[in-house]
Length: 66
Image (cartoon, rainbow, N blue to C red; front, side, top):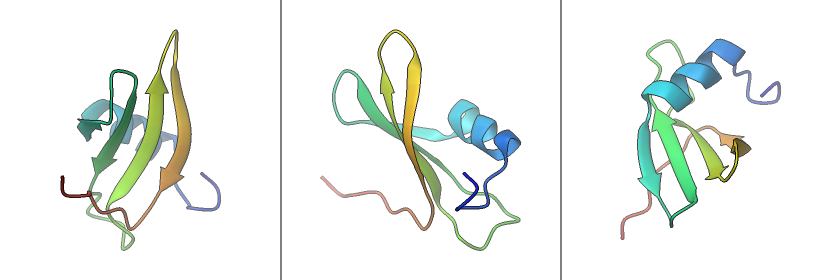
């Protein structure tokens, strides 16, 4: 988060309000645009098992077309 200059509040908003796209039953991405940032779209790659595990935080994210 520090390397991407993402605050804890931004991360929480991203996870709670972002657009979700699943890769499979447990792996997914969540992305959101923040008006005050120049490096949008912000995204996390996550895994949902017993707990939500954020694997990485990305900026300048683009959805893949499938």
